[in-house]
Image (tube, rainbow over all chains, first blue to last red; front, side, top):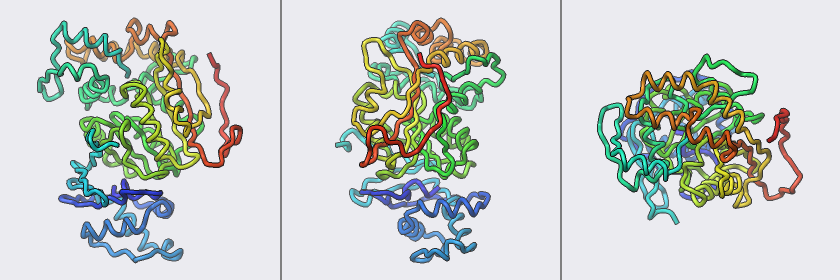
Length: 118
Length: 308
């Protein structure tokens, strides 16, 4: 899932930039209610930025209005982006420090070194 | 499953020159620094026999006093999750489970509550790998390798619920637990819930609940001593666990598995039975800026449970 760094909130050091070396496609059942709900919790700009960075062939509008959130095509695109792309190999990069967190076999490793903790 | 105190383990290891085996038969000699760390032993157990169904849960389990039959070897472990969640629903919530182990509890939660998203985090990349292999088809469930005693990779106030089952005793002492509590408080939204259960050694040390509330940001909504229910679960599971260990576990590892399984007669079991060790569960709420001591925003209905 791409959602691990796009949950809304007050943040510093987010969103993490994503570099993908290997992306896989999976098939997930579409549930429009779920997509509508989770849209409220997504930092949309960060998600859009991630989609562009990854070079995914999906077009997302710059902003989302109330009306587009009911649009079936848009919801299906969101479903695909959020649930059907799996980043198998790559890295997450902190926008402030440039620190890279590896993604291996689909799992981000967020362990820090002792020296990195204040 | 829970672990003996480090002093007892260290004695065992140095006298028998213990050698570890993993599923792929690679031998590893633990360093003397490693064996003092409970998290090392936890990780070893977590990575062994990773494809065995009976070992997908690694907690002691919970049983009501009128339960007597252990048909499904994971039933009590699921009951423990049910107890920890109490009346808090995960439906439509963003959830983090810290020290998720092999993810069986995560799967149970996702199946039963349909949260918006559920992330399982664990210190061990090996065990997270197991999670991924077994659970990658669950769409709302994902995993991350992280050390909760240092840093949780989530934005401030971004989660509704944090769950931690039978793990904080292995975090490495009060300072680590307090740092963990700070991180939990940071990532929870105001009025978010932290659902927790674990062993508390009462021999000359504070209970974990005091360490978790030390920073003043997590408020105890409910705390219940469930020692006797956990002991009852260990009792009713002891036969199946004993047979499982004898049938599946390599002979030189059986003693350790018996300890980890808390079988009757082992130090943890005896400690709980004799009152030297207690097992508590608690619901903590993330304080809001307008909190007053008796105001509650979300009402919970509590079943009547005997307090000891």
